[in-house]
Image (cartoon, rainbow, N blue to C red; front, side, top):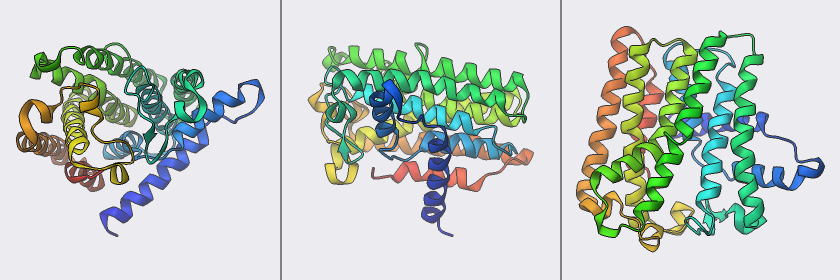
Length: 301
């Protein structure tokens, strides 16, 4: 089976897990629930829950314990995109090839849908405590990681720095940009992989290594996003290109040029793989996970 075939199979398996935990559109809250489900069901790479599941397997994890957290991380990621697309933020009308939530349901309902997804993500993650496998301490630690990496010391902190950078123009430094990338993008990738490791019983040293590798994967992923915003098109990417320039955003491409940005993206990705492959010396191996990370280097959408 080729990597693309394996990837498609894994995406379908991941989407089946996510759909199991989506709320039913009924009652007085039906409209906001429909908007939430519209947002989650827009598709996408399902990268974060997949990285979580594969890191869980890397450390020998088995069973359904990881599944509520897989659904939760995708809900949190999706809520961030719903709010990102709003007129007050990036003002984007298309994502993943179809109308964004605020265009389809209106601004007010899109705000509520994002709020709903964030809250429902934690309701969903807490369902792990209802499962018999895994001890409560590991579940609690995983929940703590999820909360921190999604909050003001994680993704929201990165979003804040990103918005403020729009008013700085060419005064944005590499340090500022790396802070944005680390927190806005890498934080949820770190959460995904760290939670997978924690739930599977990895020790503190191994969790720290995973956190470092996930940081590098996340920054590399965002640099590639910046490159695609310049080099791709709406049909391929599924969302408008050139939005960074439109929103006065300083990106790695603007700061360093496409050639240097591409070079750093490859170096970060390759080093992340080296870190994770070092676990193989202790018997931890997952070739699909390594292939998945390698694919991020050359992705076109």
